[in-house]
Length: 571
Image (cartoon, rainbow, N blue to C red; front, side):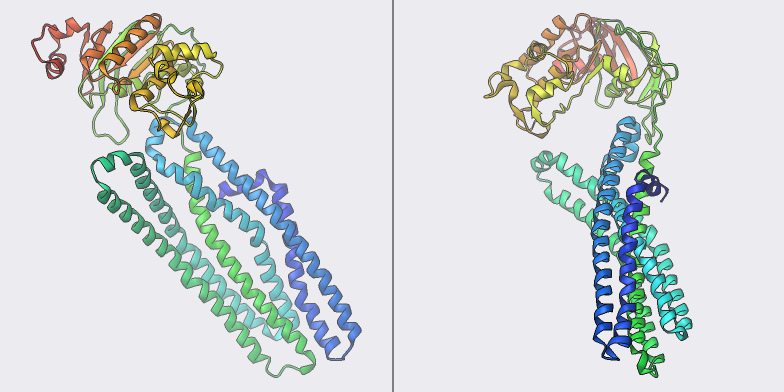
């Protein structure tokens, strides 16, 4: 709840204005039965038309004031709640951008999406409800109880019993409902995760005709959410009718005790019954707002978990601002993923000189991608040191470090928009000529020029209207447009045919003479012309040297060579 109060304080003026108009609306509702009693007892009973018209005019004026208050309350409440919802989503998104991949792995992307969408909506609806009924309910309830006592003083014991019974059920409802709604949100996380996984891998699912398996997983997650929702809603289903029954029973008791009511005061009895109905309405509103509060509290805790998440990577104190040359050095680096049972990298040491191309090869799961992810600080090492130009990367601001390091992943990630917009995404101030040059080096200009609109061709989400090889070449061109000092190519030519890959690598060698390149590949043919090759297995460096040196000294490299190219070990 502290989170909700914190955001309400930012817009306290709007919030209080909404509550002011809500108070006007509520007071108007409370005054109506009293003047109706005057119409009955002073006007109808005495057949005094002037009294009826006088009190009727007052009731109309009160109703008009209440209607105006309700309209203004709705306007301010909606604007304030929507503004707070927007700020919450923006703050979560901004916070996620500052987190490392280790934090994202722990929080899980599907859960983050749920928090940005569903959890924020729950908080937003609660804040909106606060300004619409939170104040109205207690004012209406307390005011109605006071006016019942004023109209019929003998009913004080009945009112005390009814109020305490109803409040006891409201408190029990809240205590039982809070853990159940928290569980419901976690099950929603699970359903979102299953849906996201299916949609991101739908081609593989269809290729393996595994729709039945995915359907089963989805139905299981959906059933778990339905069970959790049913358990939470069952609490509301039990307590809300019980509260209504309690207040309605009080109305019956009130009528029974007033059976000998003086006929001269029948208007007061009408007003008392009306006020009891308003008490019932207030109790219902309180029950609803508390149910909404339970959901909002569960959601706000999940939102706060993200906002209070401490980044796994600490900001550098007295950060350095070096002139980047591109030297990379690993000094006895070890790394383990959170929750993993063993180290992914073990005592890795090597050095890449400025302008040198280092090929990185090894069996699947040997730690190649993990190794290069440590350079731009996607993750931080646990033991050892990663240095760029002799400076520990933890002593450099992330934005400055990543301005010098560019990563091209194996899975090319493109965005909705034109080809030119995607290329410029790497560097907004790049000239069109620079972007075209980068596309030529990446062998992307050849297919771009054949499209109807060239560089203005519109791409679907993720570049869905391009082939895998075309997407990889565009991603590479986008990276080249940044003019980095260190270029990491993480198996980013895997979808290219041998001829196109050779052309791309040849262009890179000519253009990147002063750029340090780390070239990850599963293929010997891709890395064999690198200045040196780093061979990994099970996170351990098996050897580093030229192709010829590794063929002579590294058994792991020899095994990879034989499995791919066959023949003897002479290259």
